[in-house]
Image (cartoon, rainbow, N blue to C red; front, side, top):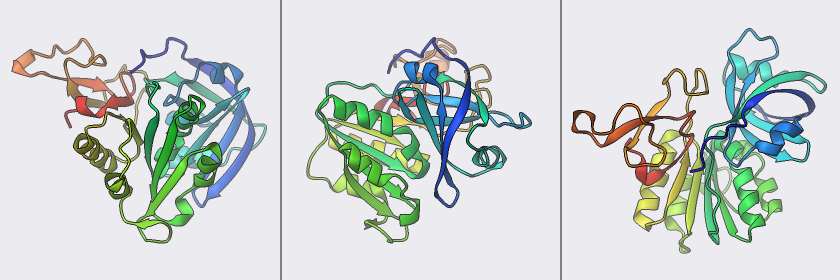
Length: 274
């Protein structure tokens, strides 16, 4: 994974557009050229709700091009509800880019797996791999067809799109990882973002295929900058992402705890010790 960016800062962004993609799913675009210039695929930001009365919330950067960046999110609580009511011309305080994102190499066949709101973190890596000439397949699962937001956008970008729904209303009926496991074309690399059970399943499929996988973990962050150690996940101590504290050999263990917000949110699947 890339080294965490030293370019994170607080940006004042002016909202340029807002769309409701489905009930409870909102996309907000804003003018923030300085943020766009340093955002990498898989980066996230901490967004302060306009009232300032709620804690900042972590959101993946969906689009970043020219002067405009965007955030795509599901309305799930007080903070995202407040953000969902923002309108064109409003100002947002956004800290970022934060965390370690996806490693974009020279792979020629890439599978990207997204579950639910995980779609918000995988457009940028898909665009970059396509720009480099790779063939990209998006495996996208959601509860219903209505919540398969932006799948047509990925198709327009040049991705082959395969979808699944829990209720069978579109595509495969069941888990999206079933489609991944059934593919006859072995990818060079798998990227994934979504709920933890899906990521665990992706890791198993990747292991069975003997394919490297990068997983962007979902977590609720308190500080978002690694200060509170409230979002840790166990990884092997030999990982390049392993923090220096605590030592890996303490109590005879080869496992250390890495912060999802600082050393992550993207980790190599084979290095996680869930």
